[in-house]
Image (tube, rainbow, N blue to C red; front, side, top):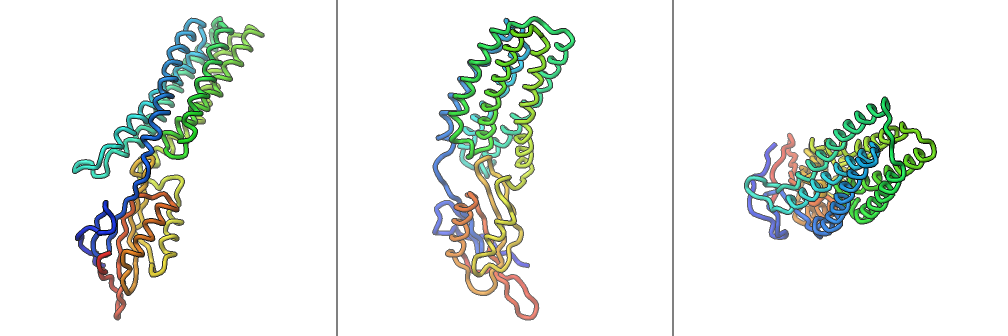
Length: 324
């Protein structure tokens, strides 16, 4: 099998390069980073202020549940900061050293956020188990009021991030964490009420263990998806077999092989594939239809397609076709 050599750029696309039988296409939509930056920064500031308030009052009230929730919220703030930093890095253009740019930093941010949450879970659980043995006196009223403020802060943050949760893994993680935090704060309110009614100090560390369970539940999917993308796996919302069928469904395409799909960032997907088009010239029309279809149907905005023309005369061989 012979593969064509690279040549001049395809004149139909401003940011493309072509070759005999090779077509490379980018789609550029509105900037997700610019749309998501403002609500993300507001959520960071709100949660950072609340972390300080919750930590101080948790220490004053001698409540490990409040301190645990403050630690959880602080890890969320670090995760939001990492997501924001990744957005800034992803805006940097590709260069000679990073030919894809720095979009993959968003995947690393999601992975780091998940690991950070797991570490926080270990620290909270360790402290909670110790307090089961020696339950301290807890100021239930203070716990309730501070946790109620947490429901408000996390609810506003979740509302700010809701419209962007489907666009990016980091934004989805941030939204889910804000919703989980609101639920955890509700649990802390109930624990404060239970302590007031019963006077039982063990309720506080018990609730902190429930906080850990919620964090683990909400973080596991993020950790799994971030590891998957770090290993160049096909993004979870895409099916490589469906993409292959889509490419093969177009007239003239006899076979698709060497199909690769991976994430350039948490918002950008790349694809490469060899298309066997026996006889005739596929031309730019077919390639334009395929790349546009990939973007429209699968949201793949960085597609590289190579055409191979099969010529059967006795034994079949693959010969390069004309430039797309």
